[in-house]
Image (cartoon, rainbow, N blue to C red; front, side, top):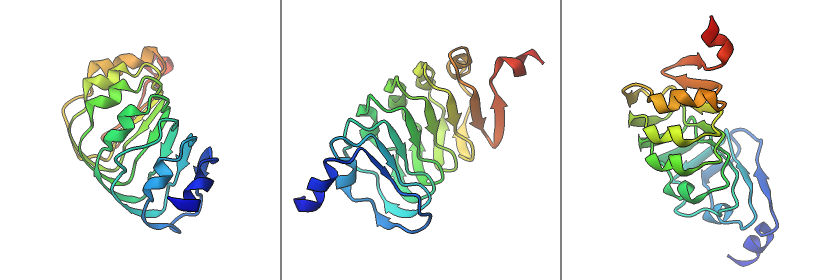
Length: 176
């Protein structure tokens, strides 16, 4: 850990906006920075797996557009403050975990352009704060969108992206 980690203790946000400049695995220490609220490392060439643990202060995770290959990181289920997850355009495998339904503060869930498979879990319908759900470009997803998710439009779900199509879930679109 040493001196490098001591510096990370005082960081609230890590935001890297230099496309394709960072390569290799993400150091585990970054995910365990005690006061970290936002981790934005999109559009780089980061590789490897997701960490086994993450600081519980995280509110936003954006690791989209990298080369991260793994199943969905289970450590995310313990992040009760999490409002936004963007893991799109990576190589996530396996099914969408039911545990995501526990993240009651989640507003944005972006998992598009991965290798996810199976059915969309009905537990996502528990996310009453959800406004945006992107699941498109996951060719191995099967079945229909559960009605529990469609019912979220009454609470604020405005955009549902599935199977390369955009379903506008606003009241105005339903009236036409």
